[in-house]
Image (cartoon, rainbow, N blue to C red; front, side, top):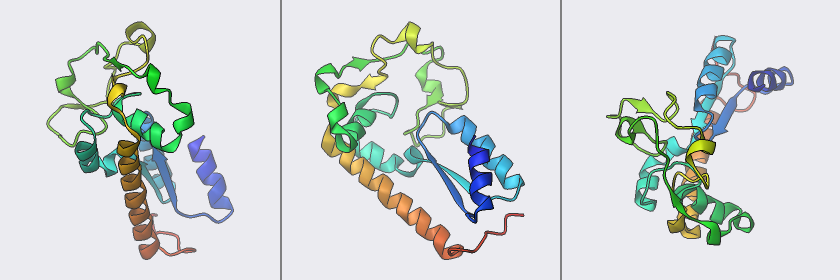
Length: 176
């Protein structure tokens, strides 16, 4: 679907594409970017957690996982009407492989052999988690979410400005 959208947008004149995603789609965007690049499209894929690993570690006490401190904090900042902190809890998954071997989306360390998206590491959530939380949502806050989101926005703008400087509007990057 992503490839079809980009191909269609290119037909009407768009020539630079950024796929902006969270931690669940990494495996798909890597292949999509490579395949589209081979077809001659300028496409980059940004996992926002990669841009702000330093801010994550300065802001949050725990690594980025699922419905945890980080995601709940972001929700408290961006969509507070949908976050009910009376239901916040702390929960961990059993994991099929010990977490010391798996790098979370927010960890800057490269000394773990596997990234979170490079294998079948988790038990199915319906078997393992009662609440769907991997981490501690109880320590989330709006202020943490604001600091994190602002850093993501600032660094995204900086990245887009870099592309616009090298390849202004109407200029197709020479990818093929």
